[in-house]
Length: 556
Image 1: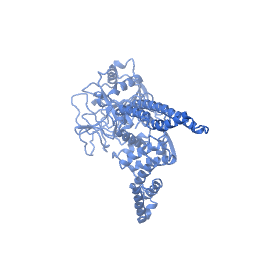
Image 2: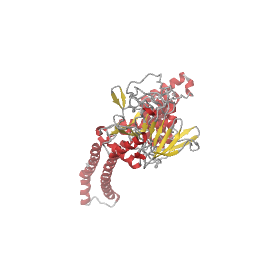
Image 3: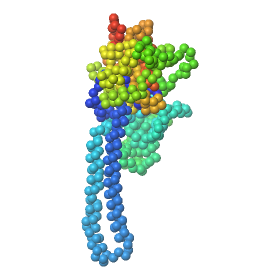
Image 4: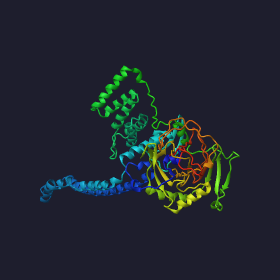
């Protein structure tokens, strides 16, 4: 996963093709791209306007009710008020016969709330679906896992890694924002409904703690209560094998809701289980984290993410150097690119400021209206999957002259023909909350790969990145023997896979990375971040190869 910007989940990637904006704003996909999440601010602003008008209407109505109350109260407080006064007698009879009826049955309150509901119904089609809540909750769990974040800290708005007594601040948002008890309950319930008690328990524990602290307070927006949180947490502990905690929480539940017969039966059940197995009273069940994607490489993958993009202190190594690069291209003679060799084995080069901030921003702007949920090939179908959370758009170079300029620049530096059919179109990908693309095989015919990232500011944790994939020419292959993995071969087009254990080809690639730079390197077949695999044969008699086969790990 990427640097601290990953914790804000704003990465984007460049690669290729042309899109259709028709389904770009589909409900249920809001969580999958930060641009969609940002667009969700607009309907909420409309809802705020509706609520403001409702509150003003209610304030005016309550002021009028207060006026009526004060008027009548003043008559009752004046002990000298004689009912013998025919005027007072008349108004008393009138108030009791009609004024109070008009007050009690006033339509003003229902008209105010009706206006609020009508406005909400007009906005409702633009609001996130429940699937977005589920997706966003799973994203928080993913961040929790990958960066080893503390749930109590997250609930307070603090992104901290706690290992033993060591506490590390990973991300400092400009504004501290804490979660409510209901927020924590909803995250825990998503995990609970999936049978994922490893994640459900700490989030429900936090919900119970926060609900206890505010018990008796009523919040209009909350769906859950302390009783709901205790109910779910007790059963989660039971499912995890901790009967003692399940019993304690169930008893606490009955203190608040003593007439709940289902919970009373659960208490009897837990008491019986503990009586039959006394050892369970002190037993602490060890809940294993579910390996949902079944990645053998998960620890390596997440360990790399936890480095937060840090680089070794390589400036002391004499063999690493900086220079200006033209690749003997007239295009670069007057404006050579700045080259920095940052690693020798594998060979990786960084070209600084390859894309300007203005260019990066324009590319994002061109792509945003076309962003749709990223999919993977599965047989003959294209499907959205949990292990790829993002939206993507494909841009032809006919969309804007900037794309032609960028192609020329890449071609001049690499010596490659980056025009179809030798390369694909430009793809822009925007990652969502906890957005990522787990380690996978880029299956297709012939070898390729290159990466480009464009950050607005390396210091901005919300910076987006862009990534581009290009094709490598055969002359870039290192003289090593290609060995296929002995693991079962994935179906053609299937992008999900495991790292092969054998040594694969060493492949020179282009990497454009943080700071609008361009990397050129030879990622080797290893058990760390990247591997290569080729499906198909190199086109003999030609200088170029088509398709993609680079093992890449796109992440937060």
